[in-house]
Length: 294
Ligand code: GLU
Image 1: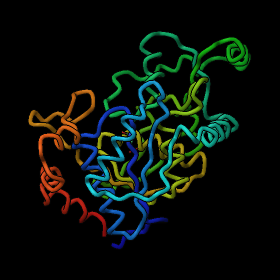
Image 2: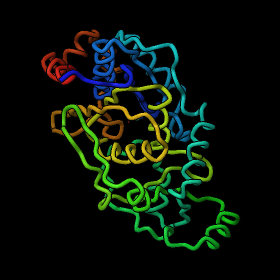
Image 3: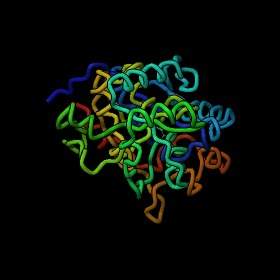
């Protein structure tokens, strides 16, 4: 069956919080090749809402590495940090719909979760927010909003599911998913000091940048459930997804900044050529993945 997309654009959306490693190269290269195959644009988005962890040095290294790898992206690079008004507007929309509520919890575990909301959840969350602040009265909310210095806005998953019913989406490689509302927690969509989160800004940006096919690692399948809910609530365009396998190290562990995976910078410094780095994935892997795009 021929793939039907509302647009042929794809994107690579790194966070400038570390140097690119092989996992990023695979993701970027795949997305670039998909755009080429579809005849769409390959867009770059710098996901820099976490101002504490993002840095210009890492951002520059992303441009340098992509250039060295000859992965050519469209000139109109989008920076999330420069588009806060867009996210603020989307948050207000969700507030009007009564689909988000303020959370004032200060327990350290919950606070840490709120602080992490600017970054994509590559690691499995081992605790689900118990919904304490969902039960606050309207008066309590108004009073706390006026008096508390820091709080977060959480998506009311149960209210959303009541409104939207069963949501189903399709991954080109992994097949059909139903959003598992019953086992999901109320994720953080924004903070008082930062009117957005990874979930809100990535979903909105995919709409604004007209991304017809979102490609990213399969550790973000659970994030897509949340993005689907946001898309339907805000009546955004609905992309198709392809979550690709992750690049693992020799111990079978996902490459990440945290595990200090070998960076492109260090591979380059050790004398490897672009072809050698790309060759590390095995041509076959990339080709068989591209076969999902018909
Ligand atoms: N900035 C996110 C990351 O680096 C992007 C995730 C996505 O592609 O949606 O993991």
